[in-house]
Length: 267
Image 1: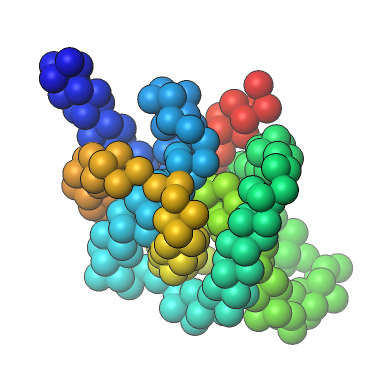
Image 2: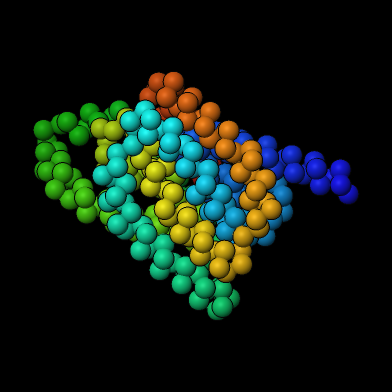
């Protein structure tokens, strides 16, 4: 029994390292990779997987933010705008989750279907990002550019509301959905800047949502400890690799990940 426990513990550490590396390199992987691994690979109850993953994300992503901040990749003004919408949304969502649990309402399939569509759509945008840039410079789309500049801050806050709600309900969205909004709202940002800004914004949301889930009793602290042991070095090394990879390659890697995850969610 002790041997089995040790092997399982090592597998959880390895899972934490793998997901941490992906988070540091691309900003994606917290809920969209870790939650399926916990549910399918380790047969963890979905509610506990979500709650544990939220606290895991809050802790591990802090390491990636430190590395990205040293390289000047984080747009802190955008982080503040997103947080204006996401933090209140996360707090409200905790109360909604408590009500849904008491009422016995199942919302898992709806969230999975919505995220699958969003991931595939985001991947498509990343693949054709260069074409989007050419289109935005076309003089026939000046009106769209004016609207974009005038309402960017408002759209960013609204994006924060959507992200905060999705993350609290499913532990997925701080990386995938956040990157999608940032690529759309700030098309001139480099991929590494979008990744770093999205990563910094994810910390307060996942922390607040994770604490809320802890109060509901859906956090496994021993599981959390094993994942953190593996992910801390993984996310740091991933952040370093992210700065060495050219922007075009980073975009292809991120798009490929989103396509695979999106397809797996609907299978």
